[in-house]
Picture (cartoon, one colour):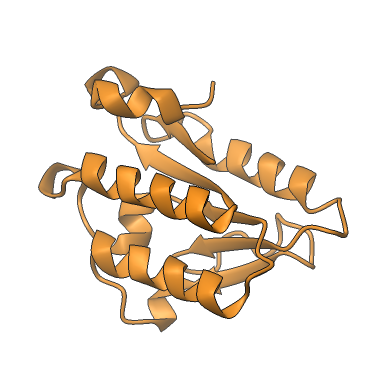
Length: 139
């Protein structure tokens, strides 16, 4: 299952993501991962959440991010939740320069195939979001 947290800069998307992270990490049966650029969430999330600083890896596009996530699932088949702290920032791209719809559809398919719940932040005004993506948006 894929879920998108959408909003403009400063609208509280990251705090919502942190709340979801910590909620899902309470269950010891879950294997929760958060992909971020930098180390800004270190002090905000529970210690057993695996934080991945994507800047340590050669990920510079949405396709490379998708491949990275697929590779994580190939290695660790027991991942239950993946959180992406701002999809475009993690991929190193600008939302205006990419086909976000194509990426989100591929990510949703990967999520279903691996039985992994994926949350991702998209920084944009929800009214400008492609209508086909609104089914993934959580309020």
